[in-house]
Length: 207
Image (tube, rainbow, N blue to C red; front, side):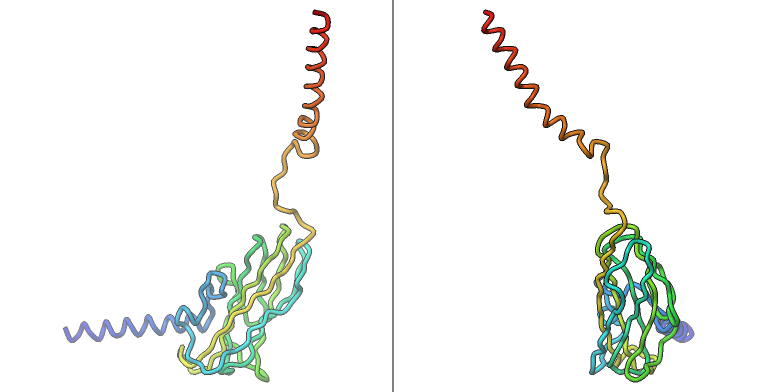
């Protein structure tokens, strides 16, 4: 029994340590798109000051155009920073990692925690607009941490940015009747009825 308990303890320590290591090299699914944040999932919290997270970049793109964007974290514990960015609203957008970021399951996250510089940390990335018109939404999450490798006394915030996509397809299905098929038949119906009534009236007069 004594030999079993230390083994269990070692497994628990490895799982916790492995989880912390995974988060330090990036995590996805915490951008706010799925209504889950780092604070809500128990990753980072307890900090006395909350950072400001801002998404900067073009708010309008044409289909296929590449836009340059940044997620900026200001304030909070302010030693190191991590991030997660995802897209929603319109399918088909392509995120491209910049310095200090990487793709993970279609989302962007930090490859390693980034040190704050003059009170803020900046993660640059690019986005290729989808082929479908509509409003694309960028979801961004940012952690401002104290750098002690623990999930306590850190702080977290979210941000969104709407990007209007034009110049592509509207995504609505088209039919072969578009341009007059059904409307022509509807427009012709009164003329047919008039002809029928005229023929009936002529027969009555002959009778």
